[in-house]
Amino acid sequence: MRLDRLLCKHTGQSYSTTREWVSAGHVIVDGEVIRTPGHIIDRFSEVKLQGARLQGQPRHYLMLNKPAGYLSATSDLVHPTVMELVPTELRSLLHIAGRLDRASTGLLILTSDGQWSRCLTDPGGKKPKVYRVRTLEPVSSEAPERFAQGIYLARENLTTTPAQIEVLGSHEARVTIYEGRHHQVKRMFAAVGNEVTALHRECMGVIELEDSLEPGGWRPLTGAEIASVSVKVKQGTD
Ligand code: URA
Image (tube, rainbow, N blue to C red; front, side, top):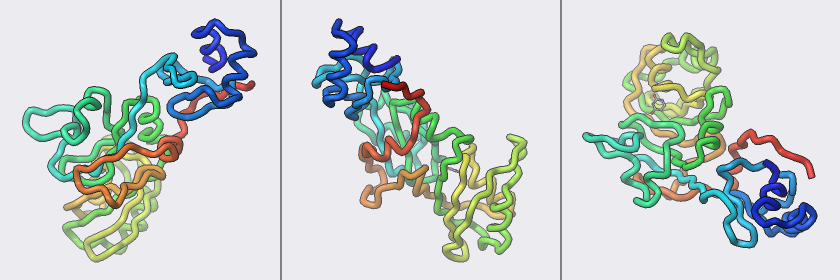
């Protein structure tokens, strides 16, 4: 629905009045001032007019530095989950945008915005995900080329998008992949006869793990980080 239409519906004012409010910067959608009356919103968009909420709930976007040993799940009877690391009042609202294995560490993104997280994690979206890995065997000299050619994953019957490896040491590398399938990095190393012994995610898209976050620490994403994931919503005209 167009923003001006929603404003008319909620306030009973004319289109020309609501357009003036929008142009004057009185309307905030999902935390951002929107000055385009034809801006397209959905039923989940949080819309505020001069501070008063007309519809929607605030959406939440967090980055967490996941420690080893925590499950990327909302609840578990045996293991602690990453939800135990975020504020209690947000737990029931958040879901995980791109899980990490229990032993893996680093950047984990949690949000209440399903459309946004689907865009971040959609394998077709080809957003880079960067991991630092330690391996059991030395990183072989042919691994960069094999990763660049793409690795065949039998379960999905597909070949991964070309990935890059930067060799950091005999048993250490930085890997950039573009899909984020189940256990993808481990399976790619297994395909070249190696085993990942530690895996730390540094980056998803352009969102980088904040250096100053201790394991278990979190912070809200910035407006720029949220906007870096472009949700495909049709944009209307004035
Ligand atoms: N790939 C893996 O193998 N494990 C993770 O946790 C993330 C990516």
